[in-house]
Length: 126
Image (cartoon, rainbow, N blue to C red; front, side, top):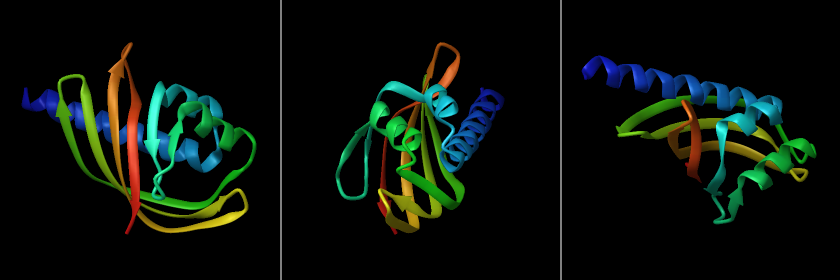
């Protein structure tokens, strides 16, 4: 059981890294694979985003990331669900408005059809 738990935590760290790379490059195809169709995400200002809204911001070029690094702080596994706490430092623009700083994210990943997908998340500025 311990080995399986460590393996799942490693998988979550890997999909977090793939998600970060997809965000940085606005890779809509990769984001489409990593985000669940029913995703709900709360931004630091309280706005609720869906998968469609997130993909549209990347496809349109409204979201531009110049710099982004992350550290996976913690992963809890609950059956077919994983909760990841991640610290991200980023710089970029959303709708030509600067985004810069350090943020704490919580992402909920669910194993769906043998693939980990984000089903929910939120972030706050640090």
